[in-house]
Image (cartoon, rainbow, N blue to C red; front, top):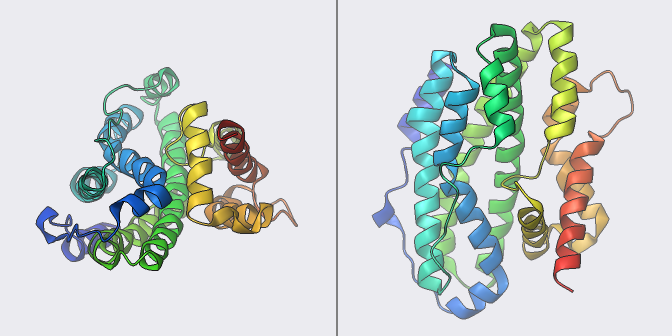
Length: 279
């Protein structure tokens, strides 16, 4: 794991802010087509600052490699993603992003208080890894679709110097979480696995959504980047990719189950909320 993080840091340092070409041929068209998606992704990337605070709360005594990963590699990379996207959206005519960087949910504070007990911290770690897996897989898929969409608009500069470098860094994050999740799951006691399944089922949410409005916004992102072009079939395919790892780990005993139902339910719910809000 340490070697993987070393390699991530060496091969993928934070993207220099002056390396981006912010030239946009039709910023008005870009905003009309992908403005909401760009605003959502920007906020999520910039909220990494709060995510690190949450991790310090949930993992009072983390494995050194975890802290190394999120403090020195993942965090700086993601912050630069957010800064690049924020600069892009403001130049296109959108407002500056206003992310939540310091307000931590009460439920996380409660779990953090219990995490001083080693067996509970292992469950917190597992939930952290699973969230990371789902978040990074969502990001990989979304950035790939956004990249293609920008090229279709003729916006080659921002696609190739902003979105392409960002999407190259996400698979390394996904791999870290997946490897860590598999390793920890194999070491957990049956009661810890049971509780992890229960908490994951109750707490799963689409990436970056912490309230009803943000869930609806994510539903809009799915429509803008083409996930819902094939209707519910597209949502099912997307959810299956996002939920694949936890399907294989947490629910392997459920023969014939294609994906955790709560994953698909969350994506469907987000899209329904978007449709209602856009009427």
